[in-house]
Amino acid sequence: MAKIPEAYLQPASQPWGRWVTSTLRNYLAKRQEYDLATENAIRQLNIATAQPMRAVLWRQTSTTVSIATAGTYVPINVAGTLAMDFNMIAGTTNASGLRNNIDRARTVSLAASYEGVGASGNVVGLKLALNNVPIDATESRSTTGGRSQWIQRMEPGDEVSLWVANIDATDDVVVARFNLLAHAVL
Image (cartoon, rainbow, N blue to C red; front, side, top):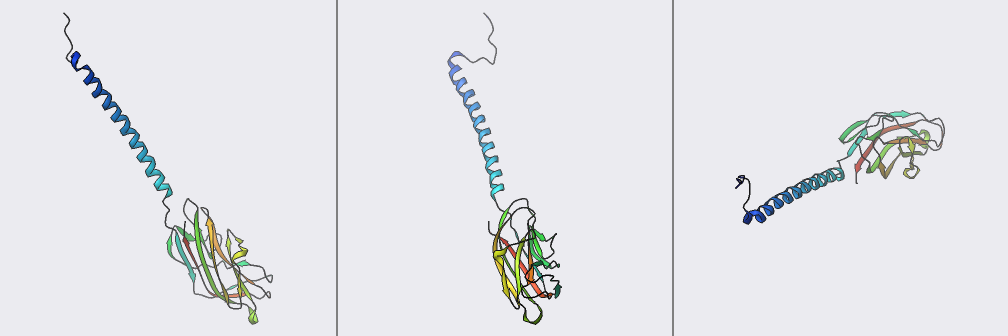
């Protein structure tokens, strides 16, 4: 008679041994599925979680903005002080702007104001611009400056900045102070 190897299960134990082996294989397979699903869920959560994004750019020093044509908007384009900056930086193409400095698009609430005058009570205007393209819907006019509020989708690298105009004449606009506040809402 041949000798039975030690790893051999007795005939009465074979069903139980197969059940143990099968159960362990199933458990390990389910564990790998669970680990993969958990990793994917965490990855999706990290992608969906919005990074904080907000900033304030302000200036309290008077500056003169040259106006060549009445009613034509030009960038203020003077550096301000960047405060409370999270994932936004001061403008790089327009110093009076704020730039999205993260790798995803965000919807941003913007509030801007400036105090400025043209000569002899001329009406002056303010517009926000996205990537140096004025947004007509943000226009405000008065004889002493302007205020504007807007919600804008900002892609990575997009920049929102302040533009002014002398509506009535070609006299330069003296900007006494300005501020631009941005806060991501989505």
